[in-house]
Image (cartoon, rainbow, N blue to C red; front, side):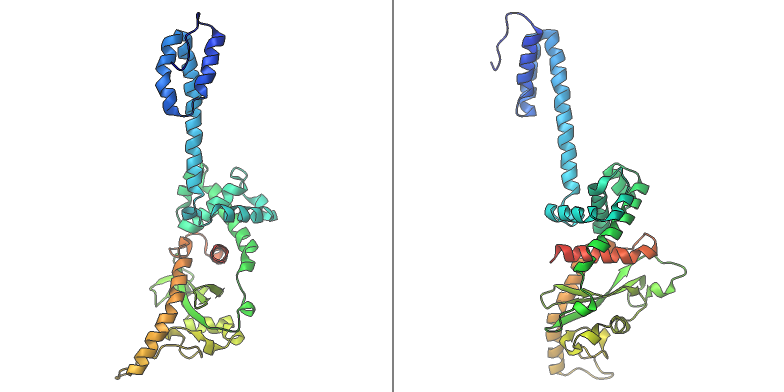
Length: 321
């Protein structure tokens, strides 16, 4: 037997055996020996077992909470691994505006809640349930931390002047959807048949994000959007590849089928070759939209959408250097 029965039942001996019992490595070992302990020490043994049971219940609760915390901090939910998350929290702590975040959450929890919102675009009520706070608390945390992330990570996004002048670039536009606002008819995109903001994206042939434009109303055509950005004034347009929506801007585009005619075999082959290069920008946009705040309708006030876009693009660049 793993312990010896004493000559007489004594509190000190019982507690000695209790300490041995509480040091058992696993809960299953404790369950196995609990009945033996009760039988040997009688009523006092029952009380000691209840004491140890309470200790194990607390240990199991803490392990469960730790597992939940690890799940919340997982890269699939926050978009960042532990090292990236730690570095981001340090940068956020260095910003004075973090003092405006709800104190009940703390900086780490506020950053995690914001990342969960940007990554999954889930409801604030659901995040509040996970974090154990109220929805208004999550809303305030998202507002504050999103602004901070856009500010501290903003420098990782290249400006027009910082775009490399040499090499090949691939350009494409995408719509970032949002709710329909009665006084903002310019958000409606006839191409996509929904409301949102238009974003121009420039990538390398390897698919690395090199530049992203300021978002414009969804009704803005790609030609106007890329011309307004000033990008084509900084780089050689002939080094850029784009789709047919950019015809007339000087960039390299596929041949357009003439009316009442067909493309020649050489033109079809040229279009195929361009499309085999151009697909990388569509893949990059799909990866950017893995941050679901940019893939599904944005539900917060419209004036906060641009800073959310900046923060999300910065997070994408931060996690894909």
